[in-house]
Image 1: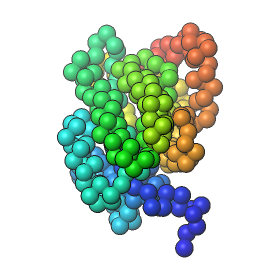
Image 2: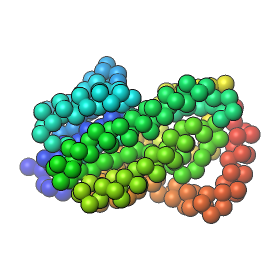
Image 3: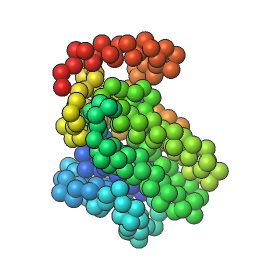
Image 4: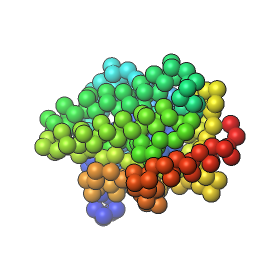
Length: 270
């Protein structure tokens, strides 16, 4: 029988938005292996079931279609989860997508859709699940943000804006909910090997700004950092740790970091 050290989430119920691929799927797999019952959410039911099959341990997972842009769908999956498990210990806000374009030319309909998914979907989910967690007297909300929520990136300005806002609302919510026994963890990955760019909305100037040496970390590494941060009731996790000094450098010397990024823009093809 597995020891408590190997099953730190035994008996826990976790709900993960954007669970059909990438970081969301990796978090689901890590949580399942840590003993949790996991509810995967995505607006694409086909991809969702494929992810559930890859994760395995079907007796520990439940897949529910949900578009976080619509509050009634969030309420529906919370109702189904409570009916099935009678509790929600962890809620992971991971659903989101990128948008590649210049601020001066980006399509405003795409801007609004990106905010609807990345930020407003997160806030709607928090508002929907907090009453459940307050009634329980405990809970953990984990927001998957980005280093782009600390450092604005050229041609990723709208995406960065959603993540800056996610960082601010998550950290404010943590202070507001602490007395109710609810922790809010903000996770900020740097470059990650996913289909992020392929799935991003692309405008007239879809340039990517990243150093050629940045290969990106694995989604599994992000998932391990999420689990560790949750178990330690952390306020924020930046992964990999090598991005921490970059964030600090930007806070102290923004002009220097922006100069370096503008040099990268000059060498980047769309």
